[in-house]
Length: 126
Ligand code: HEM
Image 1: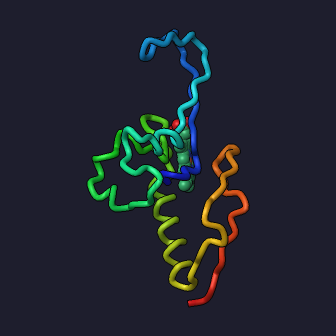
Image 2 (image 1 turned 45 degrees about the vertical axis):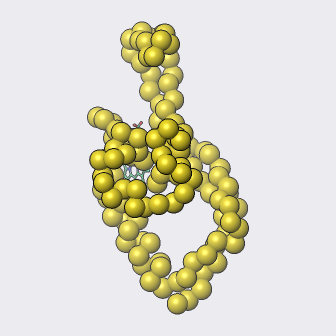
């Protein structure tokens, strides 16, 4: 959800002329915000490419830099449902199978959502 967020960017159109960090933004601009980039920002994440779930032991530490479900009034309403479903699905799968990658690196296909490319897995019964 951090390194490969399925919703890897969100977009907004500003209703009024605005300014951010010295940049003038005309009314009606299309603005894209990349969770993919924010979730990998070296200024925020120590060793950003490493998978370290223990980073989240303090839930507040990264709360302003981690947006897999967006933020604010339009934040995903399926947030808790999706997390619960993922935990159930992964727990069920790993209780039955040993799963390993055929390739070390995961390539991506950024479409409307972020998808893996050529990501083949080995499943063997436990
Ligand atoms: C891993 C799974 C999911 C991810 C990563 C995800 C991600 C997101 C994100 C980033 C947004 C905000 C879009 C924006 O701000 O423009 C969003 C909105 C939304 N999501 Fe999800 N979502 C997931 C699963 C679900 C599920 C399971 C449901 C329904 C059961 C759902 C329903 C919605 C709805 C209705 C909105 C629009 C909310 C609004 O505009 O007020 N999502 N989702």
